Image (cartoon, rainbow, N blue to C red; front, side, top):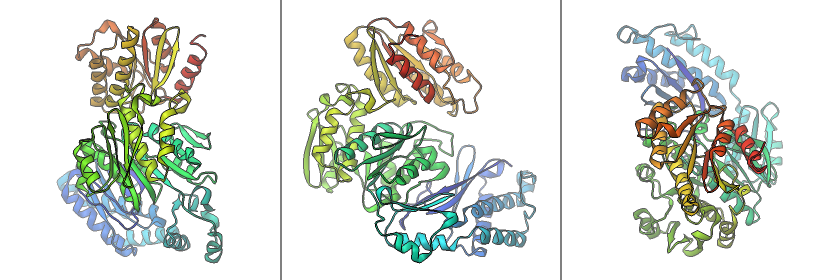
Amino acid sequence: MDIEERESLYFDESRRLTGPNLFFAETGAVLEALGPASHTLAAHHRWRHYVEHLSIALGWHATLCVARMHKASTSLALSAPFDQLFTATEVNEWAWETATAELQPELGVSNAFNGAPNDIDDVQAAITRLRARAAEERNAHLVSLVVAARELRLAVLLDDETFSVGGGSGVCSWPLANLPSAVAFERQLSGVHNIPTAIVTGSNGKTTTVRLIAAMADAAGMQAGYCCTEGVFVAGEQTFSGDYSGPAGARAVLRDGRVGCAVLETARGGVLRRGLAVSRADVAVVTNISADHFGEYGIDNLDDLADAKLIVAPAIRETGVLVLNAEDPVLMRRSSHFGLKAAVFAGDPQNVHVLAARDAGRSVCTVESGRIVLFHNNAVSDLGAITQMPLTCGGAAAYNVANIMAASLAAAALGVSRECIATVLGKFGTTRFDNPGRLEQWSIGGVHVLLDYAHNPAGLAGLMRVANALQATTGGRIGLLLGQAGNREDDDVVALARMAAQCAPDRIILKDIDGMLRGRAPGEVPVLLHAALLGAGFDAQRISTLLPELDAAKQLFAWAVAGDVVVMPMHGIAPRVAIRQWLDGGAVG
Protein backbone atom coordinates (compact mmCIF):
# COMPACT_ATOMS: atom_id res chain seq x y z
CA MET A 1 0.00 0.00 0.00
CA ASP A 2 1.44 3.36 -1.00
CA ILE A 3 0.56 6.09 1.44
CA GLU A 4 1.55 9.74 1.41
CA GLU A 5 1.14 11.66 4.65
CA ARG A 6 0.96 15.38 5.08
CA GLU A 7 0.01 17.68 7.88
CA SER A 8 -2.42 20.43 7.05
CA LEU A 9 -3.83 23.52 8.72
CA TYR A 10 -7.33 24.66 7.82
CA PHE A 11 -8.28 27.77 9.76
CA ASP A 12 -11.92 28.47 10.42
CA GLU A 13 -12.59 31.00 13.24
CA SER A 14 -15.69 29.04 14.27
CA ARG A 15 -17.36 29.30 10.86
CA ARG A 16 -17.61 26.29 8.62
CA LEU A 17 -18.24 25.76 4.95
CA THR A 18 -19.31 22.28 4.03
CA GLY A 19 -19.69 20.53 0.75
CA PRO A 20 -18.81 17.39 -1.16
CA ASN A 21 -15.30 18.55 -2.05
CA LEU A 22 -14.22 20.64 0.91
CA PHE A 23 -12.87 19.98 4.38
CA PHE A 24 -12.66 23.01 6.65
CA ALA A 25 -11.45 22.58 10.20
CA GLU A 26 -9.10 24.66 12.25
CA THR A 27 -6.33 22.08 12.22
CA GLY A 28 -6.02 18.51 11.09
CA ALA A 29 -4.15 15.84 9.19
CA VAL A 30 -4.59 14.59 5.64
CA LEU A 31 -3.54 11.21 4.30
CA GLU A 32 -3.33 10.50 0.57
CA ALA A 33 -4.18 6.82 0.06
CA LEU A 34 -3.46 4.92 -3.14
CA GLY A 35 -4.30 1.39 -4.19
CA PRO A 36 -7.41 -0.72 -4.70
CA ALA A 37 -8.96 0.15 -1.35
CA SER A 38 -8.74 3.89 -1.80
CA HIS A 39 -11.99 4.09 -3.78
CA THR A 40 -13.86 1.55 -1.68
CA LEU A 41 -16.70 2.86 0.46
CA ALA A 42 -16.38 -0.05 2.87
CA ALA A 43 -12.77 0.91 3.58
CA HIS A 44 -13.78 4.55 4.06
CA HIS A 45 -16.47 3.49 6.51
CA ARG A 46 -14.05 1.37 8.56
CA TRP A 47 -11.41 4.12 8.46
CA ARG A 48 -13.93 6.64 9.80
CA HIS A 49 -15.03 4.19 12.51
CA TYR A 50 -11.45 3.75 13.73
CA VAL A 51 -10.65 7.47 13.57
CA GLU A 52 -13.69 8.27 15.69
CA HIS A 53 -12.89 5.46 18.13
CA LEU A 54 -9.27 6.60 18.56
CA SER A 55 -10.27 10.26 18.79
CA ILE A 56 -12.61 9.54 21.69
CA ALA A 57 -9.90 7.50 23.41
CA LEU A 58 -7.48 10.41 23.02
CA GLY A 59 -9.98 12.94 24.32
CA TRP A 60 -10.47 14.69 20.98
CA HIS A 61 -14.08 15.74 20.77
CA ALA A 62 -16.24 16.38 17.70
CA THR A 63 -13.60 15.12 15.26
CA LEU A 64 -14.45 15.75 11.62
CA CYS A 65 -13.71 12.96 9.14
CA VAL A 66 -13.90 13.41 5.37
CA ALA A 67 -12.94 10.92 2.66
CA ARG A 68 -12.63 12.66 -0.70
CA MET A 69 -12.11 10.47 -3.75
CA HIS A 70 -9.97 11.56 -6.70
CA LYS A 71 -9.05 9.84 -9.93
CA ALA A 72 -5.99 8.07 -8.58
CA SER A 73 -6.25 8.41 -4.81
CA THR A 74 -8.41 9.37 -1.87
CA SER A 75 -7.74 12.16 0.61
CA LEU A 76 -8.54 11.09 4.15
CA ALA A 77 -8.89 14.15 6.37
CA LEU A 78 -9.50 14.41 10.07
CA SER A 79 -9.57 17.36 12.43
CA ALA A 80 -7.36 17.35 15.51
CA PRO A 81 -5.93 19.68 18.18
CA PHE A 82 -3.17 21.89 16.78
CA ASP A 83 -0.71 20.70 19.44
CA GLN A 84 -1.16 17.04 18.46
CA LEU A 85 -0.83 17.02 14.68
CA PHE A 86 1.98 14.46 14.54
CA THR A 87 -0.18 12.14 16.63
CA ALA A 88 -3.07 12.89 14.27
CA THR A 89 -1.05 11.71 11.28
CA GLU A 90 -0.36 8.45 13.10
CA VAL A 91 -4.03 8.06 13.98
CA ASN A 92 -4.90 8.56 10.34
CA GLU A 93 -2.33 6.06 9.10
CA TRP A 94 -3.24 3.41 11.67
CA ALA A 95 -6.97 3.74 11.01
CA TRP A 96 -6.51 3.41 7.25
CA GLU A 97 -4.05 0.53 7.39
CA THR A 98 -6.21 -1.38 9.85
CA ALA A 99 -9.36 -0.76 7.81
CA THR A 100 -7.77 -2.01 4.60
CA ALA A 101 -6.13 -4.98 6.33
CA GLU A 102 -9.55 -6.07 7.58
CA LEU A 103 -10.86 -6.00 4.03
CA GLN A 104 -7.87 -7.83 2.56
CA PRO A 105 -9.69 -11.05 1.61
CA GLU A 106 -12.12 -9.27 -0.70
CA LEU A 107 -9.79 -6.52 -1.91
CA GLY A 108 -6.53 -8.36 -2.24
CA VAL A 109 -4.75 -5.72 -0.16
CA SER A 110 -1.30 -6.69 1.10
CA ASN A 111 -0.65 -6.49 4.83
CA ALA A 112 2.91 -5.38 4.14
CA PHE A 113 2.48 -1.66 4.71
CA ASN A 114 5.70 0.27 4.46
CA GLY A 115 6.75 1.46 7.92
CA ALA A 116 3.52 0.24 9.52
CA PRO A 117 3.50 -0.02 13.33
CA ASN A 118 3.28 -3.54 14.72
CA ASP A 119 -0.11 -2.94 16.36
CA ILE A 120 -2.19 -2.99 13.18
CA ASP A 121 -5.49 -4.70 14.03
CA ASP A 122 -4.78 -4.36 17.78
CA VAL A 123 -6.98 -1.49 18.85
CA GLN A 124 -6.04 -1.48 22.52
CA ALA A 125 -2.33 -1.60 21.78
CA ALA A 126 -2.74 1.25 19.30
CA ILE A 127 -4.64 3.33 21.87
CA THR A 128 -1.90 2.76 24.45
CA ARG A 129 0.83 3.77 21.99
CA LEU A 130 -1.05 6.78 20.64
CA ARG A 131 -1.97 8.04 24.12
CA ALA A 132 1.72 8.03 24.99
CA ARG A 133 2.51 9.81 21.72
CA ALA A 134 -0.19 12.41 22.34
CA ALA A 135 0.96 13.01 25.91
CA GLU A 136 4.51 13.56 24.67
CA GLU A 137 3.37 16.02 22.02
CA ARG A 138 0.66 17.79 23.99
CA ASN A 139 1.42 21.40 24.95
CA ALA A 140 -1.34 22.61 27.23
CA HIS A 141 0.46 25.86 27.97
CA LEU A 142 0.70 26.73 24.27
CA VAL A 143 -2.99 25.95 23.88
CA SER A 144 -3.83 28.31 26.75
CA LEU A 145 -1.77 31.11 25.16
CA VAL A 146 -3.46 30.63 21.79
CA VAL A 147 -6.88 30.71 23.42
CA ALA A 148 -5.96 33.88 25.30
CA ALA A 149 -4.77 35.56 22.10
CA ARG A 150 -7.90 34.63 20.21
CA GLU A 151 -10.12 35.89 23.00
CA LEU A 152 -8.48 39.25 22.34
CA ARG A 153 -9.11 38.74 18.59
CA LEU A 154 -5.41 38.75 17.87
CA ALA A 155 -4.08 36.84 14.86
CA VAL A 156 -2.00 33.77 15.66
CA LEU A 157 0.90 32.34 13.63
CA LEU A 158 2.26 28.94 14.53
CA ASP A 159 4.86 26.68 12.98
CA ASP A 160 7.27 23.99 14.18
CA GLU A 161 9.53 26.46 15.98
CA THR A 162 7.76 29.75 16.64
CA PHE A 163 4.53 31.09 18.12
CA SER A 164 3.50 34.62 17.11
CA VAL A 165 0.63 36.91 18.03
CA GLY A 166 -0.48 39.96 16.03
CA GLY A 167 1.31 40.86 12.82
CA GLY A 168 3.94 43.10 11.26
CA SER A 169 4.48 46.27 13.29
CA GLY A 170 2.29 44.74 16.00
CA VAL A 171 3.78 41.25 16.15
CA CYS A 172 5.34 39.51 19.12
CA SER A 173 7.00 36.09 18.77
CA TRP A 174 8.35 33.41 21.08
CA PRO A 175 10.27 30.18 20.42
CA LEU A 176 8.11 27.15 21.22
CA ALA A 177 10.96 25.95 23.42
CA ASN A 178 10.78 29.11 25.54
CA LEU A 179 7.18 30.21 25.88
CA PRO A 180 6.34 32.96 28.38
CA SER A 181 4.31 32.38 31.51
CA ALA A 182 0.67 33.43 31.40
CA VAL A 183 1.49 36.55 33.41
CA ALA A 184 4.45 37.48 31.20
CA PHE A 185 2.39 36.78 28.09
CA GLU A 186 -0.36 39.15 29.17
CA ARG A 187 2.22 41.82 30.00
CA GLN A 188 4.00 41.44 26.65
CA LEU A 189 0.76 41.81 24.70
CA SER A 190 0.88 45.54 25.32
CA GLY A 191 1.25 47.12 21.89
CA VAL A 192 0.54 43.86 20.05
CA HIS A 193 -2.05 44.30 17.29
CA ASN A 194 -3.22 42.94 13.97
CA ILE A 195 -2.37 44.64 10.69
CA PRO A 196 -4.51 44.91 7.54
CA THR A 197 -4.03 41.65 5.66
CA ALA A 198 -5.00 40.55 2.16
CA ILE A 199 -4.80 37.04 0.70
CA VAL A 200 -4.60 36.63 -3.09
CA THR A 201 -5.12 33.34 -4.88
CA GLY A 202 -6.33 32.12 -8.29
CA SER A 203 -4.91 30.42 -11.38
CA ASN A 204 -3.43 33.47 -13.12
CA GLY A 205 -2.61 37.04 -12.16
CA LYS A 206 -1.82 36.44 -8.49
CA THR A 207 1.61 38.06 -8.41
CA THR A 208 0.58 41.11 -10.42
CA THR A 209 -2.50 41.60 -8.23
CA VAL A 210 -0.39 41.26 -5.08
CA ARG A 211 2.09 43.85 -6.31
CA LEU A 212 -0.69 46.25 -7.27
CA ILE A 213 -2.36 46.00 -3.86
CA ALA A 214 1.00 46.47 -2.14
CA ALA A 215 1.76 49.55 -4.28
CA MET A 216 -1.64 51.01 -3.42
CA ALA A 217 -1.11 50.35 0.29
CA ASP A 218 2.31 51.99 0.08
CA ALA A 219 0.78 55.01 -1.65
CA ALA A 220 -1.57 55.29 1.33
CA GLY A 221 1.40 55.23 3.73
CA MET A 222 0.63 51.75 5.07
CA GLN A 223 4.15 50.28 4.53
CA ALA A 224 3.23 47.09 2.70
CA GLY A 225 5.05 43.80 2.87
CA TYR A 226 4.21 41.05 0.43
CA CYS A 227 5.14 37.54 -0.62
CA CYS A 228 4.78 35.98 -4.07
CA THR A 229 6.39 33.49 -6.44
CA GLU A 230 9.39 35.85 -6.72
CA GLY A 231 10.15 36.16 -3.00
CA VAL A 232 9.36 38.26 0.07
CA PHE A 233 9.44 42.06 -0.18
CA VAL A 234 9.28 44.67 2.58
CA ALA A 235 9.77 48.42 2.20
CA GLY A 236 11.01 47.96 -1.36
CA GLU A 237 13.63 45.44 -0.23
CA GLN A 238 13.68 41.78 -1.26
CA THR A 239 14.29 39.90 1.98
CA PHE A 240 13.97 36.38 0.52
CA SER A 241 14.31 35.16 -3.08
CA GLY A 242 12.44 32.23 -4.58
CA ASP A 243 8.88 30.97 -4.59
CA TYR A 244 7.34 32.24 -1.34
CA SER A 245 3.68 31.92 -2.33
CA GLY A 246 3.00 29.50 0.52
CA PRO A 247 2.81 29.55 4.33
CA ALA A 248 6.54 30.25 4.79
CA GLY A 249 6.20 33.48 2.80
CA ALA A 250 3.13 34.57 4.74
CA ARG A 251 4.87 34.02 8.06
CA ALA A 252 7.97 35.90 6.86
CA VAL A 253 5.86 38.94 5.98
CA LEU A 254 3.72 38.91 9.10
CA ARG A 255 6.72 38.48 11.41
CA ASP A 256 8.59 41.46 9.97
CA GLY A 257 8.22 44.39 12.35
CA ARG A 258 8.44 46.93 9.52
CA VAL A 259 5.21 45.77 7.87
CA GLY A 260 2.05 47.83 8.29
CA CYS A 261 -0.05 45.97 5.71
CA ALA A 262 0.44 42.37 4.53
CA VAL A 263 -0.42 41.15 1.02
CA LEU A 264 0.01 37.40 0.70
CA GLU A 265 0.08 35.39 -2.52
CA THR A 266 -1.44 32.03 -1.68
CA ALA A 267 -0.85 29.33 -4.26
CA ARG A 268 -2.81 26.11 -4.59
CA GLY A 269 0.18 23.89 -3.79
CA GLY A 270 0.89 25.48 -0.43
CA VAL A 271 -2.77 25.36 0.56
CA LEU A 272 -3.16 21.68 -0.32
CA ARG A 273 0.12 20.61 1.25
CA ARG A 274 0.21 22.76 4.36
CA GLY A 275 -3.06 24.71 4.53
CA LEU A 276 -3.42 28.41 5.20
CA ALA A 277 -0.78 30.06 7.35
CA VAL A 278 -3.10 32.79 8.60
CA SER A 279 -6.17 32.52 10.80
CA ARG A 280 -7.62 35.88 9.81
CA ALA A 281 -7.58 38.30 6.89
CA ASP A 282 -9.40 41.50 6.03
CA VAL A 283 -9.79 40.64 2.35
CA ALA A 284 -9.28 37.60 0.15
CA VAL A 285 -9.12 37.69 -3.66
CA VAL A 286 -9.68 34.83 -6.10
CA THR A 287 -8.56 36.12 -9.50
CA ASN A 288 -9.83 33.32 -11.77
CA ILE A 289 -9.95 29.57 -12.32
CA SER A 290 -8.33 27.90 -15.32
CA ALA A 291 -7.05 24.42 -16.14
CA ASP A 292 -3.73 23.83 -14.39
CA HIS A 293 -2.09 21.34 -12.03
CA PHE A 294 -4.72 18.66 -12.65
CA GLY A 295 -3.83 15.33 -11.11
CA GLU A 296 -1.98 16.83 -8.12
CA TYR A 297 -3.32 16.46 -4.58
CA GLY A 298 -6.72 15.38 -5.83
CA ILE A 299 -7.32 18.31 -8.18
CA ASP A 300 -8.88 16.60 -11.17
CA ASN A 301 -11.10 19.29 -12.70
CA LEU A 302 -12.05 22.97 -12.56
CA ASP A 303 -14.59 22.48 -9.78
CA ASP A 304 -11.91 20.85 -7.61
CA LEU A 305 -9.56 23.73 -8.34
CA ALA A 306 -12.19 26.35 -7.52
CA ASP A 307 -12.92 24.62 -4.22
CA ALA A 308 -9.23 24.63 -3.34
CA LYS A 309 -8.95 28.34 -4.08
CA LEU A 310 -12.07 29.12 -2.06
CA ILE A 311 -10.37 27.72 1.04
CA VAL A 312 -9.34 31.35 1.63
CA ALA A 313 -12.95 32.34 2.40
CA PRO A 314 -13.15 31.05 5.99
CA ALA A 315 -10.08 33.10 6.97
CA ILE A 316 -11.89 36.38 6.27
CA ARG A 317 -12.96 38.11 9.46
CA GLU A 318 -16.64 38.85 10.00
CA THR A 319 -16.51 42.35 8.50
CA GLY A 320 -13.96 41.42 5.82
CA VAL A 321 -14.44 41.17 2.07
CA LEU A 322 -14.16 38.30 -0.41
CA VAL A 323 -13.35 39.51 -3.95
CA LEU A 324 -14.30 37.29 -6.88
CA ASN A 325 -14.10 37.42 -10.67
CA ALA A 326 -17.73 37.69 -11.82
CA GLU A 327 -16.76 36.66 -15.37
CA ASP A 328 -15.46 33.27 -14.21
CA PRO A 329 -18.47 30.93 -14.41
CA VAL A 330 -16.84 28.08 -12.47
CA LEU A 331 -15.76 30.35 -9.65
CA MET A 332 -19.13 32.02 -9.35
CA ARG A 333 -20.98 28.71 -9.46
CA ARG A 334 -18.81 27.14 -6.77
CA SER A 335 -18.91 30.21 -4.53
CA SER A 336 -22.70 30.24 -4.84
CA HIS A 337 -22.76 26.55 -3.93
CA PHE A 338 -21.24 27.45 -0.57
CA GLY A 339 -23.42 30.51 -0.06
CA LEU A 340 -20.53 32.99 -0.32
CA LYS A 341 -21.46 36.63 -0.92
CA ALA A 342 -18.67 38.68 -2.43
CA ALA A 343 -17.51 41.92 -3.90
CA VAL A 344 -17.12 41.24 -7.63
CA PHE A 345 -15.35 42.58 -10.68
CA ALA A 346 -16.11 42.23 -14.40
CA GLY A 347 -15.45 44.13 -17.59
CA ASP A 348 -19.16 44.10 -18.42
CA PRO A 349 -21.18 46.42 -16.15
CA GLN A 350 -24.32 44.45 -17.08
CA ASN A 351 -22.87 41.18 -15.81
CA VAL A 352 -25.60 39.49 -13.77
CA HIS A 353 -23.35 39.06 -10.72
CA VAL A 354 -22.24 42.70 -10.91
CA LEU A 355 -25.84 43.87 -10.98
CA ALA A 356 -26.81 41.58 -8.09
CA ALA A 357 -23.87 42.73 -5.97
CA ARG A 358 -24.68 46.40 -6.58
CA ASP A 359 -28.33 45.84 -5.71
CA ALA A 360 -27.21 44.17 -2.46
CA GLY A 361 -24.90 47.06 -1.59
CA ARG A 362 -21.72 45.06 -2.08
CA SER A 363 -18.64 46.57 -3.69
CA VAL A 364 -18.16 46.26 -7.45
CA CYS A 365 -15.46 47.20 -9.95
CA THR A 366 -16.22 47.27 -13.66
CA VAL A 367 -15.53 49.04 -16.96
CA GLU A 368 -17.71 51.82 -18.31
CA SER A 369 -16.86 53.64 -21.56
CA GLY A 370 -13.28 52.41 -21.41
CA ARG A 371 -12.74 53.54 -17.80
CA ILE A 372 -12.33 51.59 -14.56
CA VAL A 373 -15.19 52.42 -12.21
CA LEU A 374 -15.30 51.44 -8.54
CA PHE A 375 -18.52 51.22 -6.52
CA HIS A 376 -17.58 51.10 -2.83
CA ASN A 377 -19.26 52.27 0.37
CA ASN A 378 -22.15 53.75 -1.62
CA ALA A 379 -19.76 55.95 -3.60
CA VAL A 380 -18.83 55.83 -7.28
CA SER A 381 -15.18 56.47 -8.22
CA ASP A 382 -13.74 56.86 -11.70
CA LEU A 383 -10.23 55.37 -11.46
CA GLY A 384 -9.13 56.40 -14.95
CA ALA A 385 -9.01 55.37 -18.60
CA ILE A 386 -7.77 51.86 -19.29
CA THR A 387 -5.60 53.01 -22.17
CA GLN A 388 -3.79 55.41 -19.81
CA MET A 389 -2.87 52.64 -17.37
CA PRO A 390 0.62 51.36 -18.32
CA LEU A 391 -0.09 47.85 -17.06
CA THR A 392 -2.73 47.32 -19.76
CA CYS A 393 -0.40 47.97 -22.74
CA GLY A 394 -2.94 50.36 -24.23
CA GLY A 395 -5.77 47.98 -23.39
CA ALA A 396 -4.24 44.94 -25.17
CA ALA A 397 -3.46 43.17 -21.89
CA ALA A 398 -7.07 42.38 -20.99
CA TYR A 399 -5.98 40.05 -18.22
CA ASN A 400 -4.26 42.98 -16.50
CA VAL A 401 -7.52 44.94 -16.69
CA ALA A 402 -9.00 42.12 -14.59
CA ASN A 403 -6.02 42.23 -12.19
CA ILE A 404 -6.47 45.99 -11.85
CA MET A 405 -10.15 45.61 -10.95
CA ALA A 406 -9.38 42.88 -8.40
CA ALA A 407 -6.61 44.93 -6.79
CA SER A 408 -8.77 48.07 -6.68
CA LEU A 409 -11.53 46.26 -4.79
CA ALA A 410 -9.03 44.71 -2.38
CA ALA A 411 -7.24 47.99 -1.73
CA ALA A 412 -10.54 49.77 -1.11
CA ALA A 413 -11.50 47.05 1.37
CA LEU A 414 -8.18 47.66 3.18
CA GLY A 415 -9.04 51.34 3.51
CA VAL A 416 -6.94 52.77 0.66
CA SER A 417 -8.47 55.94 -0.75
CA ARG A 418 -9.79 56.31 -4.28
CA GLU A 419 -7.07 58.92 -4.95
CA CYS A 420 -4.24 56.55 -3.98
CA ILE A 421 -5.71 53.72 -6.05
CA ALA A 422 -6.07 55.93 -9.13
CA THR A 423 -2.56 57.36 -8.74
CA VAL A 424 -1.01 53.90 -8.66
CA LEU A 425 -3.01 52.72 -11.67
CA GLY A 426 -1.81 55.73 -13.63
CA LYS A 427 1.86 54.88 -13.17
CA PHE A 428 2.29 51.21 -12.16
CA GLY A 429 3.95 49.41 -15.06
CA THR A 430 5.65 52.51 -16.44
CA THR A 431 8.92 50.66 -15.93
CA ARG A 432 9.36 46.92 -16.08
CA PHE A 433 10.84 47.05 -12.57
CA ASP A 434 7.34 47.60 -11.19
CA ASN A 435 6.34 44.03 -12.04
CA PRO A 436 9.44 41.94 -12.77
CA GLY A 437 8.83 38.63 -14.50
CA ARG A 438 5.37 39.72 -15.63
CA LEU A 439 5.00 41.29 -19.10
CA GLU A 440 8.47 42.82 -19.03
CA GLN A 441 9.39 44.48 -22.33
CA TRP A 442 12.59 45.33 -24.21
CA SER A 443 13.24 46.79 -27.65
CA ILE A 444 16.71 45.87 -28.90
CA GLY A 445 17.75 46.61 -32.49
CA GLY A 446 14.10 46.83 -33.47
CA VAL A 447 13.29 43.42 -31.94
CA HIS A 448 10.56 43.57 -29.32
CA VAL A 449 10.87 41.12 -26.41
CA LEU A 450 8.10 40.13 -24.01
CA LEU A 451 9.19 38.23 -20.88
CA ASP A 452 6.39 36.72 -18.82
CA TYR A 453 5.43 33.90 -16.45
CA ALA A 454 2.53 32.56 -18.56
CA HIS A 455 2.37 28.90 -17.57
CA ASN A 456 -0.99 27.54 -18.71
CA PRO A 457 -3.25 27.87 -21.79
CA ALA A 458 -5.21 30.83 -20.42
CA GLY A 459 -2.06 32.69 -19.45
CA LEU A 460 -0.42 32.00 -22.81
CA ALA A 461 -3.51 33.15 -24.71
CA GLY A 462 -3.51 36.46 -22.86
CA LEU A 463 0.19 37.00 -23.48
CA MET A 464 -0.12 36.21 -27.17
CA ARG A 465 -2.93 38.76 -27.54
CA VAL A 466 -0.47 41.40 -26.34
CA ALA A 467 2.12 40.09 -28.81
CA ASN A 468 -0.39 40.22 -31.64
CA ALA A 469 -1.31 43.82 -30.80
CA LEU A 470 2.37 44.76 -30.84
CA GLN A 471 2.96 42.88 -34.10
CA ALA A 472 0.13 44.84 -35.70
CA THR A 473 2.18 47.99 -35.23
CA THR A 474 5.53 46.54 -36.33
CA GLY A 475 4.49 44.30 -39.23
CA GLY A 476 7.02 41.68 -38.11
CA ARG A 477 6.85 38.04 -37.12
CA ILE A 478 6.20 36.38 -33.75
CA GLY A 479 8.54 33.88 -32.13
CA LEU A 480 7.53 31.86 -29.07
CA LEU A 481 9.51 30.05 -26.40
CA LEU A 482 7.47 27.09 -25.13
CA GLY A 483 7.89 24.71 -22.21
CA GLN A 484 5.97 23.23 -19.31
CA ALA A 485 6.76 21.98 -15.81
CA GLY A 486 7.07 18.22 -15.50
CA ASN A 487 4.39 17.83 -12.83
CA ARG A 488 1.58 18.56 -15.28
CA GLU A 489 -0.43 15.71 -16.74
CA ASP A 490 0.11 14.81 -20.39
CA ASP A 491 -3.29 16.30 -21.25
CA ASP A 492 -2.22 19.63 -19.73
CA VAL A 493 0.95 19.65 -21.82
CA VAL A 494 -1.08 18.90 -24.94
CA ALA A 495 -3.56 21.68 -24.12
CA LEU A 496 -0.71 24.19 -23.83
CA ALA A 497 0.68 23.10 -27.22
CA ARG A 498 -2.73 23.38 -28.85
CA MET A 499 -3.13 26.90 -27.53
CA ALA A 500 0.32 27.76 -28.90
CA ALA A 501 -0.65 26.37 -32.31
CA GLN A 502 -3.92 28.28 -32.24
CA CYS A 503 -1.98 31.52 -31.68
CA ALA A 504 -0.05 30.76 -34.91
CA PRO A 505 3.43 32.14 -34.16
CA ASP A 506 5.99 32.07 -36.96
CA ARG A 507 8.54 30.18 -34.88
CA ILE A 508 8.42 27.99 -31.76
CA ILE A 509 11.46 26.83 -29.80
CA LEU A 510 10.74 24.10 -27.28
CA LYS A 511 12.65 23.90 -24.00
CA ASP A 512 12.80 22.21 -20.64
CA ILE A 513 12.18 24.38 -17.59
CA ASP A 514 15.31 24.42 -15.47
CA GLY A 515 14.63 23.00 -12.01
CA MET A 516 11.07 21.99 -12.88
CA LEU A 517 11.44 18.56 -14.50
CA ARG A 518 9.63 17.21 -11.42
CA GLY A 519 9.93 13.53 -12.21
CA ARG A 520 10.12 13.77 -16.00
CA ALA A 521 13.21 12.82 -18.00
CA PRO A 522 15.11 15.67 -19.70
CA GLY A 523 13.42 16.41 -23.03
CA GLU A 524 10.29 14.43 -22.21
CA VAL A 525 7.98 17.44 -22.05
CA PRO A 526 9.33 19.00 -25.29
CA VAL A 527 8.67 15.67 -27.06
CA LEU A 528 5.03 15.80 -25.90
CA LEU A 529 4.74 19.45 -26.95
CA HIS A 530 6.23 18.70 -30.38
CA ALA A 531 3.83 15.84 -31.05
CA ALA A 532 0.85 17.92 -29.91
CA LEU A 533 1.87 20.85 -32.12
CA LEU A 534 2.08 18.56 -35.14
CA GLY A 535 -1.27 17.04 -34.19
CA ALA A 536 -2.76 20.53 -34.17
CA GLY A 537 -1.51 21.10 -37.72
CA PHE A 538 1.48 23.29 -36.87
CA ASP A 539 4.29 23.23 -39.48
CA ALA A 540 7.19 21.04 -38.33
CA GLN A 541 9.65 23.33 -40.15
CA ARG A 542 8.76 26.13 -37.74
CA ILE A 543 9.58 24.08 -34.62
CA SER A 544 12.96 23.43 -33.04
CA THR A 545 14.08 22.17 -29.63
CA LEU A 546 16.87 23.35 -27.35
CA LEU A 547 16.52 22.03 -23.81
CA PRO A 548 18.43 24.53 -21.62
CA GLU A 549 16.00 27.38 -20.99
CA LEU A 550 18.55 30.20 -21.24
CA ASP A 551 20.09 28.82 -24.45
CA ALA A 552 16.66 28.41 -26.02
CA ALA A 553 15.74 32.02 -25.19
CA LYS A 554 18.97 33.31 -26.72
CA GLN A 555 18.44 31.22 -29.85
CA LEU A 556 14.93 32.60 -30.28
CA PHE A 557 16.24 36.15 -30.01
CA ALA A 558 18.99 35.36 -32.56
CA TRP A 559 16.28 34.20 -35.00
CA ALA A 560 14.49 37.55 -34.83
CA VAL A 561 15.04 40.61 -37.04
CA ALA A 562 13.89 44.20 -36.68
CA GLY A 563 10.10 44.39 -36.33
CA ASP A 564 9.74 40.88 -34.90
CA VAL A 565 8.13 40.18 -31.53
CA VAL A 566 9.83 37.57 -29.36
CA VAL A 567 7.62 36.03 -26.65
CA MET A 568 9.50 34.41 -23.77
CA PRO A 569 7.44 32.68 -21.07
CA MET A 570 10.21 31.79 -18.60
CA HIS A 571 9.73 30.06 -15.28
CA GLY A 572 13.07 28.96 -13.84
CA ILE A 573 14.32 31.74 -11.55
CA ALA A 574 18.02 31.50 -12.47
CA PRO A 575 17.45 31.48 -16.27
CA ARG A 576 14.97 34.33 -15.93
CA VAL A 577 17.49 36.44 -14.02
CA ALA A 578 20.21 35.56 -16.54
CA ILE A 579 18.13 36.40 -19.61
CA ARG A 580 17.03 39.67 -18.02
CA GLN A 581 20.66 40.65 -17.43
CA TRP A 582 21.56 39.59 -20.98
CA LEU A 583 18.78 41.69 -22.48
CA ASP A 584 19.68 44.65 -20.25
CA GLY A 585 23.19 44.41 -21.69
CA GLY A 586 21.86 44.75 -25.23
CA ALA A 587 21.67 40.97 -25.86
CA VAL A 588 25.38 40.63 -26.61
CA GLY A 589 27.96 38.25 -25.24
